[in-house]
Image (cartoon, rainbow, N blue to C red):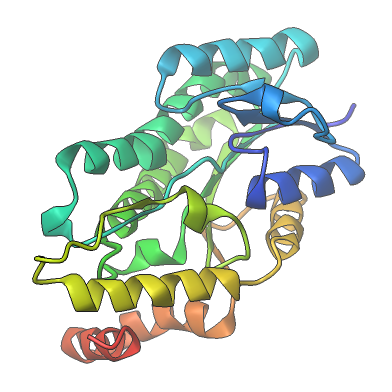
Amino acid sequence: MSKVVLITGGSSGIGKSVGEYLQVKGYKVYGTSRNPDNYPDSKFPIVALDVTKPETIATCVNAVLNKESKIDVLINNAGAGITGPIEEIPDSEIKRNFETNLFGPINVIKAVLPTMRSQNSGLIINITSIAGYMGLPYRGIYSASKGALELITEAFRMELKEFNIEMTNVAPGDFATNIAAGRYHAPILDDSPYQEKYGNTLRTMDEHVDEGNDPQQMANAIFRIIETNKPKIHYKVGAFMQKFSIVLKRILPDTVYEKLLMNHYKL
């Protein structure tokens, strides 16, 4: 029987590319969206789900189980970007980002675990970010929420070993998707002490996304992970220098690495 894959945020960007590729490879794929009716031409079924609303998580998982009786792979891909000086980002937006990028994925994991435990098998792939390995200026909240999911995965893996359930992180760099359009941007305020530096950094970030790699690269990586018997804890996918930045953080003195980041962002 084909493995059943549930991909949160599967209607566009990385999630869509991964879903279409896995379907071609013979998997039974279900994606999710807050508004499935907006995607009538999707090549795989899209189920209603808002990761910030636990009741929709339960409804979505039950809908897939009613059709397939199992879920072999969960890909926690739904996420949201956020930019701005931490001082100026409203508390409500900070909380919303953590609800989407951290608490939402945790709740989806909780929803599929009873089924995976009864199957004595399962794979959970959390899509994090290379930004989660470092505190980036004007992306600090995003870095924190994705970094927290990385650490949650490390702990979860050990708790799930006895049930034959595997979990891993995949941290992408910049990919050519619509994430920049969907991100929360704290406004560039005329009277803000951060006006010039934040404005310049925001333009740099958007250029990186526009010039990002093809999401098909992520699809290939996810397929290889699913086909692996014992996935590693962490995977990084993206441009060489983005991945190498994690190595540099590990080997350089903190202040030297900080200076490199500040030079990169022209701060």
